[in-house]
Each structure stands twice: as C-alpha cells, then as structure tokens.
Length: 183
Image (cartoon, rainbow, N blue to C red):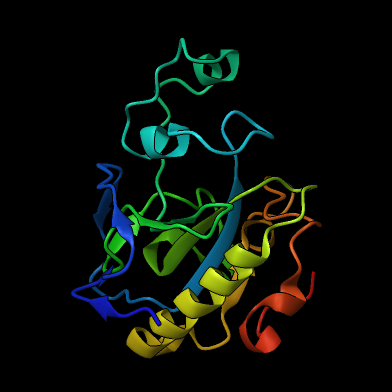
C-alpha cells in the first residue's frame, strides 16, 4: 500500500525534474491523467525516460533523441513495465505533462492534474504489474487529494486530435472502480 507524505509517495524512487513550477493559487488537484511513453518509441527499459524528464537526454544516443532535443517535459509519476514506481515532481507542484489541454470546459490541465506515465505504447498491451501499481497509486492519491474522485482520464481525452495515449491497448476496465472516461 502506498502512502503520500508531503506530496511525495514514500515508496516511489525519486528523480527530481527541473521541469515543474507552482500551481495557480486557486488550483488544487482534481484530475489524474494517464499517459503512455517509451523511449525510443516502441522500446522499453533503459534510463532514457528519467534522462528526458531531468533534461539529461543525450541527443546522440538515438536518432529520435535528436528530434526531441531541448524538449522540457515531466510527469509526476512513471510506472515501468515491471511495476517500478518513479516520482519526478511533488504532487503539489505542476508537472509539464499535458500541454495544450482541456477537461470539462477547463483549460490548462497541468494546473490541476497529476500526470502518471506508463511505460508503453498505444498498440502494446500494458503489463499486469502496471495496472496493479496504478490502482494502488490511485487509491493513495484519492485519499490525499479527494477532488480526484472519478476524474481519471487519458491524455487522449484532454488533448483529442493531438495525443493518442495511453491508446487502444490500455484496458480501462482494469482501473480502480472503472471510474474513467469510456474509451
């Protein structure tokens, strides 16, 4: 069971990202956004997601890395294929994961959301370890940030036409209480 203390999940490995800033004063966490990520695309494992979120990705390490050189992005969490949980940004701060986005008429989802990346690809099934960790994380986050309630969506739902993750391979029926957008 996960526990949140001072906006950090105690059981997560920490890799501090500089790609974060303060939430608006009238903000607060009321949305959880599920993403999918792999670096290079379609490949799993390796240090590259940590490197990307900490601005240390070597652009000569892979041709794709040169394409995203200088990109400053982050997420609050990453769940690796084996279920390892990594946290990059404390939950009371804004991570840079959603980009141009809107949910239920409210723009700028980074202002009021927690981003959870799953190591994966739109067309590759996510692992059972990832669903288990995601569900445990959701329970801990709901206990600390009750406004999340059933506001759990995919990146594809808050940036339709621009983003497709976590994609059709993500099984929403395996998420806590099935309290998510129909996919």
